[in-house]
Each structure stands twice: as structure tokens, then as C-alpha cells.
Image (cartoon, rainbow, N blue to C red):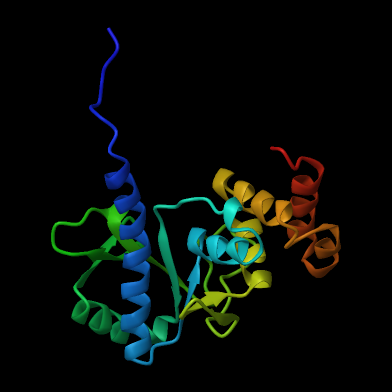
Length: 195
């Protein structure tokens, strides 16, 4: 017997996507108001860069990831608490839940600048100053974003790299700008653009 999950509500689905965008805007506004340097990284940074070239190529995301300096973390906890977020540390990840009843999936996840996300990563995350203003918030530079995606290189990172390739933001010339290990990974993406 086929299990059913109820009616599709397009309005609720659109609302769910908008909640993610609003969470990002709210967190960025709180950090800006407090004068705390940050940069949008991860899926939303890919969205910001792809949107500049082809808005039809943008993918939806559930993730909100921000790059912060560890030295600014306590100030960020305070600024984000004032905006309604609550800090939580779970499984080695610092995050800010969007309200008291929020789940980890509804959080802003922190990546620490100039630190490796995982001990086995080839490179640390970039500094927050490797960013630029875009859409009213700081977004990690394209170069830093590509290095981050090539460093983590999970399935979704490879998809994001293919998105950047498809809209012409990266190409084979980027291999010369990267450390050898990351250049090899980019070459693999170039050789298999469809996945």
C-alpha cells in the first residue's frame, strides 16, 4: 500500500524557502548592526554568485552558513541572541537556532575563519575579509567559495561546483590558481560536468 503524505501546499513550500532567506537576512542584519565581520558561505553563497549570472540556475537550499572569526564569537552570540537566536553547540558544530522551538535544520551554522572545518581538510576556511557586499550582506568571494567547495568536496559541493561551471563563473583556467590537490579535484569536475 502506498503511503500518502497529504496535499501539496505550494504556498507553504514557497513560505519554507522564504523562511530560510529571512533567517539569513535576520542574522546578517544583527551582525551588521553590531559591527561584527562575517561572510555568507556554503549554499547561500553559491546562490548569490549563480544569481548574478542566471537567476533561473539558482537552487533552493535549507542551509544557512556564516563565516565568523573565533575572536568575535562571543560578540556574535550576544548580537544574534538580541535578534531572537539561541546558541547551541552540538556534535562539534556551533549553531544559532532561530527561536526557542527551532530544530538544528532551522539554524545558522558557524564556520570559523582561518580554521579547518575538519582536521583532514587540506585548507582552512578563508578569513571574513575575503568577501564582498552583495544584496545587503557580506558574501565570501568567488575564489574563496571555490576553494571551500573543493576542500570539502562532498556530493553537494560537487553539485555546487558544477553549477558555478555551468553558468561560466569557473572554468579550466582556475586549475592554475589552486593548490595541486584542489586543482585535481576541479579537473575531475571539468571532466564530468554532468555528474
